[in-house]
Length: 101
Image (cartoon, rainbow, N blue to C red; front, side):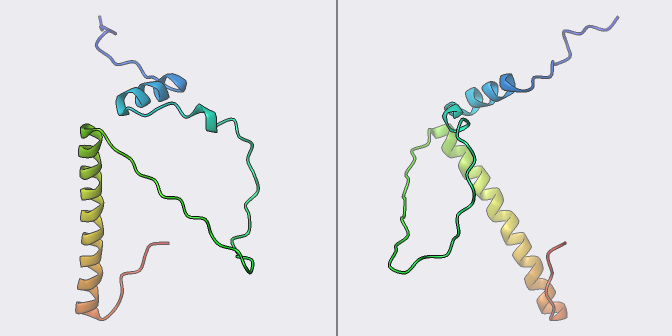
């Protein structure tokens, strides 16, 4: 007989989102889900107007800071590897490595 207690149960939907929020320490963001979608505005600036700038600071917990360092380190590595491929292709063939698509 197989024991079903050994198999993990699949969690989906609201329960999965709740577990992820608790595990990552992220607050519930339900207040933004009730907003009605709005049409995209034109990005052209009108004469005599300024663009508003917002600056945000955040203070991650030590575990969040560690996770951010790992994530940014991985992103930096991927970027540098891609750059090395492009530079190598240029040096060998005097051509560029194009993006797929």
